[in-house]
Length: 306
Image (tube, rainbow, N blue to C red; front, side, top):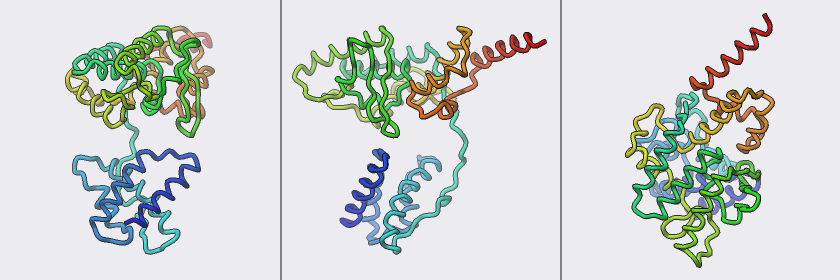
């Protein structure tokens, strides 16, 4: 198993040198190695990989397939130097590849989510989650980007937020509205009072003064929406759906302001950190409000042609 651990370190180093982050993959693959060790097999086998990926009855086939995909990448790396390591077939765990339909938050939903953070026992933790969810809702940032923010990434003078080495190792600056900047400033002052001598660079911190962990954020989010009724909505809201909602609301506002949407999509793509508008189209959800505005614009255009 020590050989597998060393091989995993080499595999991760190689993939990361190519630009992949693999934070979750590393976490899961290290768990996989522990599981493989319990099976007393010196080599990676398809049966062990399948048993590990499907060990949770509460997970969906999609989750099983994603876990197996992580193992497949590592298995191919091992197989290149020792053919006794088996590589699971890519379709070993079939699952429907339908696009997940995101939940589009209304302004009232976002307000209810932030209001519910007040039920958190500790004031700093409550403020961390309230500010975090608010920032995600008004900026369209990825959760990982927000959690990776350092205090030095907020330029209070220019109102710009620096997102460093995000997806595909790209960085960008995000302009903030004055109200958003004020909310971040209030949180910054609160954190400074509670941890005046802290050397932790992270902007969002836990009760211990350490950087928030993504898994804990998701668990806290579920607890909060169970309390305020959002959990019963369909599709069930996710943290990532705040990003979808930001994209849809931005386009809706463009329609409401009678602006040309298509020429502005590259701006939205840059804001979201996408490589091109084609990636941004994934975030376009046909809400009734958006479709109504689009239909009205189409009707006006057809009227001009008649």
